[in-house]
Image (tube, rainbow, N blue to C red; front, side, top):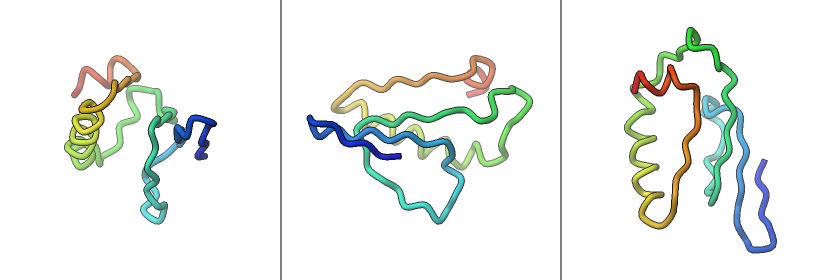
Length: 78
């Protein structure tokens, strides 16, 4: 779901990035949820996503703050 407020800030809420057919949308704020909060549920594509995620965060930090929340045990694996 994409919401643009009065200040023209685009807020995107998404639950899953795994669908290759979905068009990537530019947003100022990205809110996601963790379907698999159980630390035993680990997807196999983590190493593919990691460099893309890191680059996205680096680019975002140039102009703004980045807040990343998640399940502690999974973050420690990174």
